[in-house]
Length: 120
Image 1 (tube, helix red, strand yellow):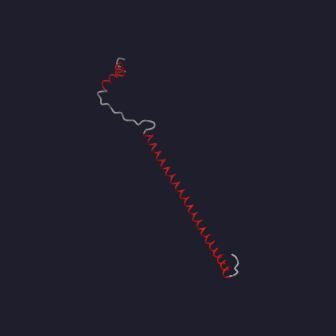
Image 2: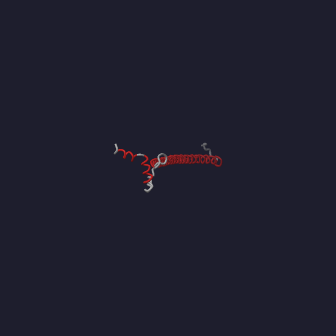
Image 3: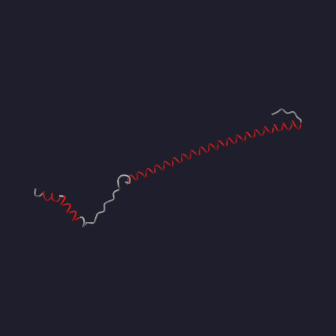
């Protein structure tokens, strides 16, 4: 029992406090390793946010490309439609011109040459 008493005295808070008061100021103050805070700015959280941002930018880029491709397809379709309409109107104008030329020829022939031609 007597042997355990000094060990208990060494473990007492008063002894520990006095040892700290005497020994620790003589030692160099040890720098604590800076711990990353938990929560919003922890290293893990920052990395996760950065990865999420990368994924978001990649998804945004894909979305933008898809939108551009759709817009290009729509533009190509409208250009083709416009070209077809223009060609059709040119063909119609040509047909109308031919008809008007024939009818003008008929009118001229009837009027000046006094030839009976059936109306076209």
